[in-house]
Length: 182
Image 1: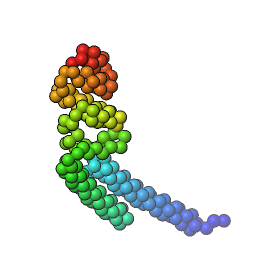
Image 2: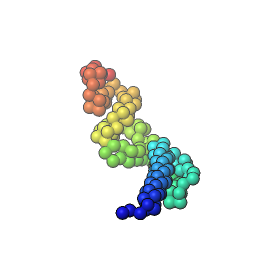
Image 3: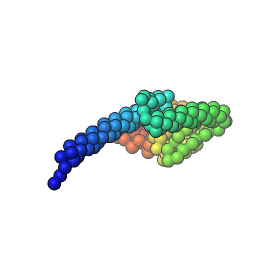
Image 4: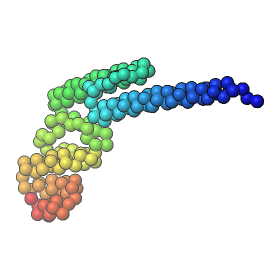
């Protein structure tokens, strides 16, 4: 037979166990909310590309606080690298614009060209440059170079330039202009 004092003791132990489980569940839920809030802060900062934005470290457990500090350091490093890259681009642009010839930087499309790329340099080199620009995917710049060349050339050479423009943008309007010869 079961002793009378054992049943209340088991009930009390079960209640204590249930209470402990409830406390752990609340703690886990609070921790999950804090992790989710930190995740939202990181995603917002990354999507906005706002490297100056900081991860707020409000009432976080020690390990999440350390993680937030590390993420903030990462954002600071990215901002410094971005500023350094922009400075290097600016210096390269200045250097390329001081070179007396044409500078083209491309990887399957034109990434950069200096100011000399659009200056007059003769019919054949300009047509070659326009072909290169079209092959690399910069049709708009190729068309603009040929259009500025067309305005400066005598009417006898304009048909070749219009043929180049037709090759760059094969449209009915370009075909009509080429057939007209203007």
